[in-house]
Length: 372
Image 1 (cartoon, rainbow, N blue to C red):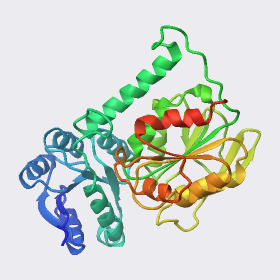
Image 2 (image 1 turned 90 degrees about the vertical axis):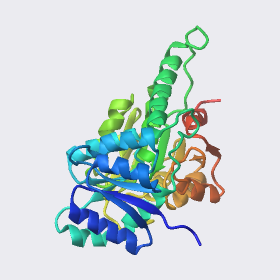
Image 3 (image 1 turned 90 degrees about the horizontal axis):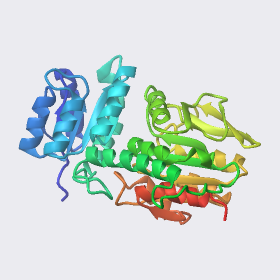
Protein backbone atom coordinates (compact mmCIF):
# COMPACT_ATOMS: atom_id res chain seq x y z
CA UNK A 1 0.00 0.00 0.00
CA UNK A 2 1.43 3.37 -1.04
CA UNK A 3 2.35 5.77 1.73
CA UNK A 4 0.09 8.82 1.98
CA UNK A 5 1.45 12.16 0.83
CA UNK A 6 2.62 14.16 3.87
CA UNK A 7 2.04 17.91 3.91
CA UNK A 8 2.76 21.03 5.98
CA UNK A 9 0.03 23.66 5.63
CA UNK A 10 1.13 27.29 6.08
CA UNK A 11 -1.22 30.27 6.40
CA UNK A 12 -1.56 33.10 8.91
CA UNK A 13 -5.33 32.60 8.93
CA UNK A 14 -6.48 29.89 11.34
CA UNK A 15 -9.64 29.52 9.27
CA UNK A 16 -7.73 28.95 6.03
CA UNK A 17 -5.36 26.49 7.69
CA UNK A 18 -8.35 24.51 8.92
CA UNK A 19 -10.16 24.57 5.57
CA UNK A 20 -7.08 23.50 3.60
CA UNK A 21 -6.05 20.83 6.13
CA UNK A 22 -9.56 19.34 6.21
CA UNK A 23 -9.70 19.16 2.41
CA UNK A 24 -6.33 17.46 2.17
CA UNK A 25 -7.02 15.01 5.00
CA UNK A 26 -10.39 14.06 3.49
CA UNK A 27 -8.59 13.23 0.23
CA UNK A 28 -5.96 11.02 1.85
CA UNK A 29 -3.17 13.59 2.29
CA UNK A 30 -1.67 13.47 5.78
CA UNK A 31 -1.20 16.95 7.25
CA UNK A 32 1.77 16.49 9.57
CA UNK A 33 1.90 20.11 10.77
CA UNK A 34 0.29 23.52 10.42
CA UNK A 35 2.30 26.75 10.46
CA UNK A 36 1.17 30.34 11.09
CA UNK A 37 4.06 32.01 9.31
CA UNK A 38 7.16 31.30 7.27
CA UNK A 39 9.39 30.83 10.30
CA UNK A 40 7.12 28.11 11.69
CA UNK A 41 6.98 26.51 8.23
CA UNK A 42 10.77 26.32 7.98
CA UNK A 43 10.90 24.71 11.43
CA UNK A 44 8.08 22.27 10.60
CA UNK A 45 9.76 21.19 7.37
CA UNK A 46 13.02 20.58 9.21
CA UNK A 47 11.25 18.53 11.91
CA UNK A 48 8.75 16.53 9.85
CA UNK A 49 10.45 16.26 6.41
CA UNK A 50 7.11 16.41 4.52
CA UNK A 51 6.58 15.60 0.85
CA UNK A 52 5.06 19.01 0.12
CA UNK A 53 4.37 22.41 1.69
CA UNK A 54 1.44 24.71 0.96
CA UNK A 55 2.64 28.26 1.50
CA UNK A 56 0.70 31.50 1.91
CA UNK A 57 2.39 34.60 0.47
CA UNK A 58 1.79 37.43 2.94
CA UNK A 59 2.46 36.44 6.57
CA UNK A 60 3.97 38.10 9.66
CA UNK A 61 7.52 37.46 10.94
CA UNK A 62 8.63 35.66 7.76
CA UNK A 63 6.67 35.85 4.51
CA UNK A 64 6.23 33.10 1.95
CA UNK A 65 9.08 34.28 -0.30
CA UNK A 66 11.59 34.28 2.54
CA UNK A 67 10.34 30.90 3.73
CA UNK A 68 10.69 29.32 0.29
CA UNK A 69 14.24 30.63 -0.01
CA UNK A 70 15.14 29.27 3.44
CA UNK A 71 13.52 25.88 2.83
CA UNK A 72 15.30 25.45 -0.50
CA UNK A 73 18.64 26.38 1.07
CA UNK A 74 18.32 24.08 4.09
CA UNK A 75 15.77 21.32 3.47
CA UNK A 76 14.73 21.30 -0.21
CA UNK A 77 11.04 20.39 -0.34
CA UNK A 78 8.38 20.94 -3.04
CA UNK A 79 6.34 24.08 -2.28
CA UNK A 80 2.91 25.04 -3.64
CA UNK A 81 2.21 28.74 -3.19
CA UNK A 82 -1.33 29.76 -2.25
CA UNK A 83 -1.76 33.26 -3.62
CA UNK A 84 -4.55 35.81 -3.34
CA UNK A 85 -5.93 37.06 -6.64
CA UNK A 86 -4.26 40.49 -6.74
CA UNK A 87 -1.69 42.19 -8.95
CA UNK A 88 0.68 42.61 -6.02
CA UNK A 89 0.42 38.94 -5.12
CA UNK A 90 0.98 37.97 -8.77
CA UNK A 91 4.37 39.70 -8.71
CA UNK A 92 5.30 38.11 -5.40
CA UNK A 93 4.17 34.69 -6.58
CA UNK A 94 6.49 34.83 -9.60
CA UNK A 95 9.30 35.79 -7.24
CA UNK A 96 8.50 32.68 -5.19
CA UNK A 97 8.77 30.55 -8.34
CA UNK A 98 12.21 32.07 -8.96
CA UNK A 99 13.22 31.12 -5.43
CA UNK A 100 12.25 27.50 -6.04
CA UNK A 101 8.50 27.08 -5.47
CA UNK A 102 7.08 24.54 -7.93
CA UNK A 103 3.67 26.02 -8.70
CA UNK A 104 0.89 28.16 -7.27
CA UNK A 105 -2.82 27.89 -6.52
CA UNK A 106 -5.07 30.95 -6.47
CA UNK A 107 -7.04 31.37 -3.27
CA UNK A 108 -10.60 32.50 -4.00
CA UNK A 109 -12.09 35.76 -2.87
CA UNK A 110 -15.64 36.25 -1.65
CA UNK A 111 -17.18 33.43 0.38
CA UNK A 112 -13.94 31.53 0.89
CA UNK A 113 -15.35 28.33 2.37
CA UNK A 114 -17.82 27.85 -0.49
CA UNK A 115 -15.29 28.71 -3.18
CA UNK A 116 -12.58 26.51 -1.68
CA UNK A 117 -15.00 23.61 -1.57
CA UNK A 118 -15.65 24.07 -5.28
CA UNK A 119 -11.91 24.03 -5.96
CA UNK A 120 -11.13 21.12 -3.63
CA UNK A 121 -10.38 18.56 -6.34
CA UNK A 122 -8.06 20.96 -8.16
CA UNK A 123 -6.17 21.84 -4.96
CA UNK A 124 -5.71 18.21 -3.94
CA UNK A 125 -4.53 17.25 -7.44
CA UNK A 126 -2.00 20.08 -7.43
CA UNK A 127 -0.71 19.21 -3.96
CA UNK A 128 -0.21 15.57 -4.93
CA UNK A 129 1.42 16.51 -8.24
CA UNK A 130 3.79 19.04 -6.67
CA UNK A 131 4.72 16.49 -3.99
CA UNK A 132 6.19 14.24 -6.69
CA UNK A 133 8.63 16.88 -7.96
CA UNK A 134 12.29 16.30 -7.11
CA UNK A 135 13.63 19.68 -5.97
CA UNK A 136 16.85 18.35 -4.46
CA UNK A 137 18.79 19.19 -7.62
CA UNK A 138 18.37 21.34 -10.67
CA UNK A 139 17.79 19.07 -13.70
CA UNK A 140 20.69 18.94 -16.11
CA UNK A 141 22.88 21.25 -14.01
CA UNK A 142 25.26 21.20 -11.07
CA UNK A 143 22.79 23.24 -9.04
CA UNK A 144 21.76 21.93 -5.66
CA UNK A 145 18.50 23.87 -5.38
CA UNK A 146 15.84 25.08 -7.83
CA UNK A 147 16.89 28.66 -7.07
CA UNK A 148 20.43 27.88 -8.20
CA UNK A 149 19.09 26.04 -11.25
CA UNK A 150 17.01 29.10 -12.20
CA UNK A 151 20.01 31.41 -11.78
CA UNK A 152 22.15 29.10 -13.91
CA UNK A 153 19.44 29.01 -16.60
CA UNK A 154 19.27 32.81 -16.80
CA UNK A 155 23.05 33.14 -16.87
CA UNK A 156 23.31 30.47 -19.57
CA UNK A 157 20.73 32.28 -21.69
CA UNK A 158 22.54 35.60 -21.32
CA UNK A 159 25.90 34.01 -22.13
CA UNK A 160 24.49 32.24 -25.17
CA UNK A 161 22.93 35.44 -26.46
CA UNK A 162 26.13 37.43 -25.96
CA UNK A 163 28.27 34.69 -27.49
CA UNK A 164 26.12 34.32 -30.58
CA UNK A 165 26.13 38.06 -31.14
CA UNK A 166 29.90 38.47 -30.87
CA UNK A 167 31.24 35.14 -32.05
CA UNK A 168 33.02 34.88 -28.68
CA UNK A 169 33.72 31.17 -28.96
CA UNK A 170 35.79 31.48 -32.16
CA UNK A 171 37.15 34.99 -31.74
CA UNK A 172 35.45 36.04 -34.99
CA UNK A 173 32.13 37.59 -35.85
CA UNK A 174 29.62 34.76 -36.27
CA UNK A 175 27.82 34.42 -39.58
CA UNK A 176 24.13 35.13 -39.03
CA UNK A 177 21.93 32.08 -39.41
CA UNK A 178 19.69 31.94 -42.47
CA UNK A 179 16.24 31.38 -41.00
CA UNK A 180 13.17 30.37 -42.94
CA UNK A 181 10.60 33.04 -43.69
CA UNK A 182 7.67 33.64 -41.33
CA UNK A 183 8.28 30.90 -38.71
CA UNK A 184 5.91 30.33 -35.79
CA UNK A 185 6.75 28.82 -32.40
CA UNK A 186 4.02 27.33 -30.17
CA UNK A 187 4.90 26.75 -26.50
CA UNK A 188 2.67 24.80 -24.10
CA UNK A 189 3.36 24.28 -20.39
CA UNK A 190 1.84 23.83 -16.96
CA UNK A 191 3.38 22.88 -13.59
CA UNK A 192 6.97 24.11 -13.43
CA UNK A 193 6.53 25.97 -16.69
CA UNK A 194 6.96 29.70 -15.97
CA UNK A 195 10.74 29.66 -15.40
CA UNK A 196 11.20 27.20 -18.27
CA UNK A 197 9.30 29.46 -20.66
CA UNK A 198 11.31 32.43 -19.39
CA UNK A 199 14.54 30.63 -20.23
CA UNK A 200 13.47 29.71 -23.75
CA UNK A 201 12.20 33.22 -24.52
CA UNK A 202 15.46 34.70 -23.21
CA UNK A 203 17.42 32.47 -25.58
CA UNK A 204 15.49 33.21 -28.76
CA UNK A 205 17.37 35.52 -31.13
CA UNK A 206 15.35 38.34 -32.62
CA UNK A 207 16.97 37.55 -35.97
CA UNK A 208 14.85 34.39 -36.17
CA UNK A 209 11.81 36.70 -36.54
CA UNK A 210 9.49 34.25 -34.84
CA UNK A 211 5.82 34.67 -34.09
CA UNK A 212 5.45 33.04 -30.65
CA UNK A 213 2.24 31.83 -29.01
CA UNK A 214 2.53 30.76 -25.35
CA UNK A 215 -0.06 28.77 -23.43
CA UNK A 216 0.86 28.45 -19.75
CA UNK A 217 -1.84 27.05 -17.46
CA UNK A 218 -2.38 30.06 -15.23
CA UNK A 219 -5.43 31.91 -13.88
CA UNK A 220 -6.68 35.31 -14.95
CA UNK A 221 -4.77 38.06 -13.16
CA UNK A 222 -1.46 36.27 -13.46
CA UNK A 223 -1.03 35.89 -17.23
CA UNK A 224 -0.70 39.64 -17.74
CA UNK A 225 2.10 39.83 -15.20
CA UNK A 226 3.70 36.76 -16.74
CA UNK A 227 3.68 38.43 -20.16
CA UNK A 228 5.34 41.54 -18.71
CA UNK A 229 8.05 39.40 -17.11
CA UNK A 230 8.72 37.65 -20.41
CA UNK A 231 8.80 40.97 -22.22
CA UNK A 232 11.45 42.30 -19.83
CA UNK A 233 13.57 39.14 -20.14
CA UNK A 234 13.38 38.67 -23.90
CA UNK A 235 14.31 40.51 -27.09
CA UNK A 236 10.77 39.81 -28.29
CA UNK A 237 7.80 42.08 -27.71
CA UNK A 238 5.57 39.99 -25.45
CA UNK A 239 2.00 40.84 -24.44
CA UNK A 240 -1.03 39.16 -22.95
CA UNK A 241 -3.42 38.14 -25.71
CA UNK A 242 -6.56 40.17 -26.32
CA UNK A 243 -9.42 39.26 -28.61
CA UNK A 244 -8.49 40.14 -32.18
CA UNK A 245 -4.81 40.79 -31.39
CA UNK A 246 -2.41 40.45 -34.33
CA UNK A 247 1.31 39.68 -34.25
CA UNK A 248 4.10 39.43 -36.76
CA UNK A 249 7.77 38.54 -36.56
CA UNK A 250 9.55 39.39 -33.31
CA UNK A 251 6.33 39.38 -31.30
CA UNK A 252 4.74 36.97 -28.81
CA UNK A 253 1.38 36.49 -27.12
CA UNK A 254 0.60 34.80 -23.82
CA UNK A 255 -2.84 33.18 -23.62
CA UNK A 256 -5.02 35.07 -21.16
CA UNK A 257 -6.09 33.20 -18.04
CA UNK A 258 -9.61 31.80 -18.17
CA UNK A 259 -9.89 32.01 -21.97
CA UNK A 260 -8.89 29.79 -24.86
CA UNK A 261 -6.61 31.41 -27.44
CA UNK A 262 -7.52 30.40 -31.00
CA UNK A 263 -5.61 31.32 -34.13
CA UNK A 264 -8.39 32.78 -36.23
CA UNK A 265 -6.54 34.10 -39.27
CA UNK A 266 -3.12 34.00 -40.91
CA UNK A 267 -1.94 36.00 -43.92
CA UNK A 268 1.38 37.37 -45.16
CA UNK A 269 3.29 36.41 -42.04
CA UNK A 270 0.84 37.94 -39.57
CA UNK A 271 -1.55 35.95 -37.40
CA UNK A 272 -4.64 36.99 -35.51
CA UNK A 273 -6.05 35.36 -32.38
CA UNK A 274 -9.52 35.14 -30.93
CA UNK A 275 -10.26 34.60 -27.25
CA UNK A 276 -13.19 32.39 -26.32
CA UNK A 277 -14.87 31.13 -23.18
CA UNK A 278 -15.73 27.77 -24.71
CA UNK A 279 -15.79 24.92 -22.17
CA UNK A 280 -12.44 23.85 -20.71
CA UNK A 281 -10.53 21.13 -22.54
CA UNK A 282 -8.52 18.65 -20.50
CA UNK A 283 -10.05 20.46 -17.48
CA UNK A 284 -8.14 23.66 -18.32
CA UNK A 285 -8.74 27.00 -19.99
CA UNK A 286 -6.62 28.19 -21.71
CA UNK A 287 -5.81 24.84 -23.28
CA UNK A 288 -2.67 24.12 -25.28
CA UNK A 289 -4.70 21.83 -27.56
CA UNK A 290 -6.98 24.67 -28.68
CA UNK A 291 -4.13 26.98 -29.66
CA UNK A 292 -2.07 24.32 -31.40
CA UNK A 293 -5.04 22.80 -33.22
CA UNK A 294 -6.24 26.14 -34.59
CA UNK A 295 -2.68 27.18 -35.45
CA UNK A 296 -2.29 23.99 -37.46
CA UNK A 297 -5.54 24.77 -39.30
CA UNK A 298 -4.57 28.36 -40.20
CA UNK A 299 -0.82 28.74 -40.46
CA UNK A 300 0.73 27.81 -43.79
CA UNK A 301 4.37 28.71 -43.03
CA UNK A 302 6.98 26.75 -41.00
CA UNK A 303 5.87 25.91 -37.48
CA UNK A 304 7.37 24.26 -34.37
CA UNK A 305 5.35 23.06 -31.37
CA UNK A 306 7.02 22.46 -28.00
CA UNK A 307 5.42 20.70 -25.04
CA UNK A 308 7.09 21.57 -21.75
CA UNK A 309 6.80 20.40 -18.14
CA UNK A 310 3.30 20.03 -16.73
CA UNK A 311 0.72 17.64 -15.36
CA UNK A 312 -2.15 16.23 -17.37
CA UNK A 313 -2.75 15.42 -21.02
CA UNK A 314 -3.12 18.88 -22.56
CA UNK A 315 -1.14 19.29 -25.76
CA UNK A 316 -1.33 15.71 -27.01
CA UNK A 317 -4.09 16.41 -29.53
CA UNK A 318 -2.47 19.70 -30.43
CA UNK A 319 0.86 18.16 -31.42
CA UNK A 320 -0.95 15.60 -33.56
CA UNK A 321 -2.54 18.47 -35.48
CA UNK A 322 0.76 20.31 -35.85
CA UNK A 323 2.47 17.14 -37.11
CA UNK A 324 -0.31 16.54 -39.66
CA UNK A 325 0.19 20.10 -40.88
CA UNK A 326 3.89 19.42 -41.45
CA UNK A 327 5.21 21.17 -38.35
CA UNK A 328 8.01 19.92 -36.13
CA UNK A 329 7.21 18.69 -32.62
CA UNK A 330 9.54 18.80 -29.60
CA UNK A 331 8.91 17.58 -26.04
CA UNK A 332 10.88 18.27 -22.88
CA UNK A 333 12.43 15.09 -21.51
CA UNK A 334 11.60 13.51 -18.17
CA UNK A 335 14.91 14.30 -16.47
CA UNK A 336 14.53 18.07 -16.94
CA UNK A 337 10.75 18.28 -16.38
CA UNK A 338 9.36 19.24 -12.99
CA UNK A 339 6.32 17.11 -13.86
CA UNK A 340 6.59 14.65 -16.75
CA UNK A 341 2.89 14.54 -17.57
CA UNK A 342 2.18 16.66 -20.64
CA UNK A 343 5.49 15.77 -22.36
CA UNK A 344 4.92 12.07 -21.71
CA UNK A 345 1.45 12.19 -23.25
CA UNK A 346 2.86 14.05 -26.25
CA UNK A 347 5.59 11.44 -26.72
CA UNK A 348 3.00 8.66 -26.51
CA UNK A 349 1.25 10.07 -29.59
CA UNK A 350 4.21 8.97 -31.70
CA UNK A 351 4.52 12.31 -33.51
CA UNK A 352 7.27 13.90 -31.38
CA UNK A 353 10.40 14.46 -33.46
CA UNK A 354 12.74 15.22 -30.56
CA UNK A 355 12.54 14.61 -26.82
CA UNK A 356 15.18 16.86 -25.28
CA UNK A 357 16.62 18.29 -22.09
CA UNK A 358 15.62 21.88 -21.43
CA UNK A 359 19.03 23.26 -22.32
CA UNK A 360 18.81 21.74 -25.82
CA UNK A 361 15.30 22.84 -26.75
CA UNK A 362 16.01 26.35 -28.07
CA UNK A 363 18.81 25.10 -30.32
CA UNK A 364 16.50 22.40 -31.68
CA UNK A 365 13.79 24.96 -32.42
CA UNK A 366 16.25 27.19 -34.27
CA UNK A 367 17.77 24.24 -36.15
CA UNK A 368 14.29 23.28 -37.36
CA UNK A 369 13.77 26.83 -38.65
CA UNK A 370 17.17 27.31 -40.29
CA UNK A 371 17.43 27.04 -44.05
CA UNK A 372 19.52 24.10 -45.24
